[in-house]
Image 1 (cartoon, rainbow, N blue to C red):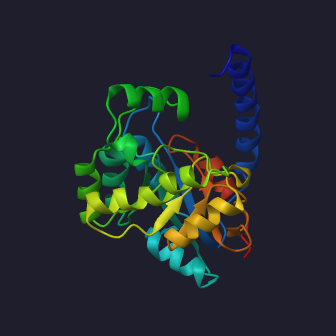
Image 2: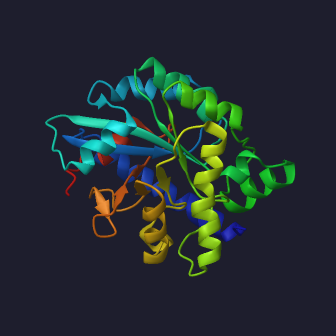
Length: 264
């Protein structure tokens, strides 16, 4: 668990980072390209108005597209003339069902929700451990299978995020098989549709390895990181990169990250 020193460091770091992004974002506008923004959660602000307001502001500068269309365009190495934005959300918190999906529908688009089946199925002890010790996000509730199936039937996508939010830079093949391969079958069993998308937890390149990426690519059609966001791909053109955002971030910060011309 983080110490008080760790907490103070991250607060100070976050403050100065925010000030820099505020300054840079004043002069930034989204540029042409295919941008996948990846979020996780809400904070204590009013919802769904915070997310609706963000999308309203963002829609003045970009066009929202469906997640599967963004993936297809990236894999064809397209270079659109306009800034195009698609959305994904990791970890499967209940706000995905209650807030993100309904607001995205208002704007005529969908999202990908990457989930951990053991969290979806978790009892109170598992949920608390997941929240407090794994993702370090307090007081969250998971979407259950009925929520995920309903979202899937509405045109949202459900993807795999390992069984337990496991860091896949492991050399334990049996553990990797369980976390990566079993995750696919668990999701397919409950939503009655193929699961062809996988995002590895934590998302940095150092938090996966060639063994785990090879296994993921032999199991899923598409694999995603949350790193190296100025490039479309990592792992030698095999893994699609996403850019982290959160719905409570100021629009200036997001515009800054969308202002970089991405490269194949």
